[in-house]
Amino acid sequence: MKAKAKLVVKKSFSNGWGSKELSKEEYVEHWLELTGQFAYLFYPANRGDELLKFQGAIDELASKAWDDHE
Image 1 (tube, rainbow, N blue to C red):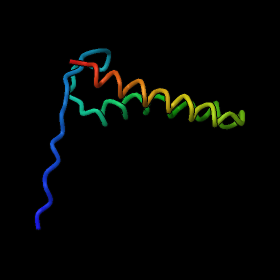
Image 2: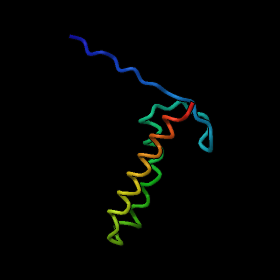
Image 3: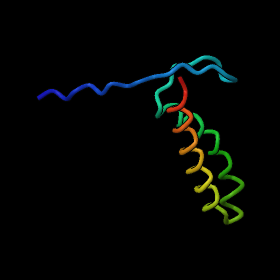
Image 4: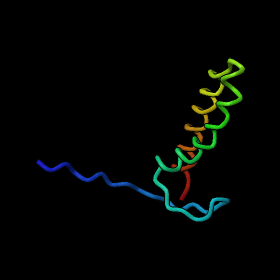
Protein backbone atom coordinates (compact mmCIF):
# COMPACT_ATOMS: atom_id res chain seq x y z
CA MET A 1 0.00 0.00 0.00
CA LYS A 2 1.36 3.43 -0.95
CA ALA A 3 1.57 6.17 1.66
CA LYS A 4 -0.31 9.34 0.81
CA ALA A 5 1.82 12.37 0.03
CA LYS A 6 1.44 15.06 2.65
CA LEU A 7 0.37 18.43 1.26
CA VAL A 8 2.76 21.10 2.50
CA VAL A 9 1.47 24.65 2.42
CA LYS A 10 4.08 27.35 1.99
CA LYS A 11 3.74 31.09 2.32
CA SER A 12 5.97 33.85 0.94
CA PHE A 13 7.98 35.89 3.43
CA SER A 14 10.20 38.82 2.66
CA ASN A 15 12.41 40.51 5.25
CA GLY A 16 16.03 40.64 6.43
CA TRP A 17 16.76 37.12 5.20
CA GLY A 18 15.41 37.84 1.72
CA SER A 19 12.31 36.39 0.08
CA LYS A 20 11.48 32.77 0.85
CA GLU A 21 8.62 30.33 0.55
CA LEU A 22 8.34 28.63 3.94
CA SER A 23 6.10 25.99 5.43
CA LYS A 24 4.89 26.57 8.96
CA GLU A 25 7.47 24.09 10.27
CA GLU A 26 10.28 25.83 8.36
CA TYR A 27 9.17 29.26 9.56
CA VAL A 28 9.05 28.20 13.21
CA GLU A 29 12.40 26.40 12.89
CA HIS A 30 13.98 29.55 11.43
CA TRP A 31 13.07 31.51 14.56
CA LEU A 32 14.03 28.72 16.96
CA GLU A 33 17.46 28.37 15.32
CA LEU A 34 18.20 31.94 16.35
CA THR A 35 17.78 31.01 20.03
CA GLY A 36 20.27 28.13 19.97
CA GLN A 37 23.28 30.32 20.67
CA PHE A 38 21.66 31.59 23.86
CA ALA A 39 22.35 28.18 25.43
CA TYR A 40 25.97 29.30 25.93
CA LEU A 41 24.70 32.01 28.28
CA PHE A 42 21.74 30.35 29.97
CA TYR A 43 23.05 26.89 30.81
CA PRO A 44 26.34 27.91 32.51
CA ALA A 45 24.25 30.25 34.67
CA ASN A 46 21.91 27.35 35.59
CA ARG A 47 19.02 29.12 33.88
CA GLY A 48 18.27 26.55 31.19
CA ASP A 49 14.63 26.38 32.25
CA GLU A 50 14.25 30.06 31.36
CA LEU A 51 15.70 29.41 27.91
CA LEU A 52 13.26 26.55 27.37
CA LYS A 53 10.35 28.81 28.34
CA PHE A 54 11.64 31.47 25.96
CA GLN A 55 11.92 28.91 23.14
CA GLY A 56 8.38 27.74 23.89
CA ALA A 57 7.16 31.32 23.57
CA ILE A 58 9.06 31.71 20.27
CA ASP A 59 7.46 28.51 18.96
CA GLU A 60 3.99 29.76 19.92
CA LEU A 61 4.50 33.26 18.51
CA ALA A 62 6.09 32.09 15.26
CA SER A 63 3.29 29.56 14.73
CA LYS A 64 0.69 32.28 15.20
CA ALA A 65 2.61 34.70 12.94
CA TRP A 66 2.69 32.06 10.18
CA ASP A 67 -1.04 31.38 10.61
CA ASP A 68 -1.87 35.11 10.47
CA HIS A 69 0.39 35.84 7.48
CA GLU A 70 -1.35 36.08 4.13
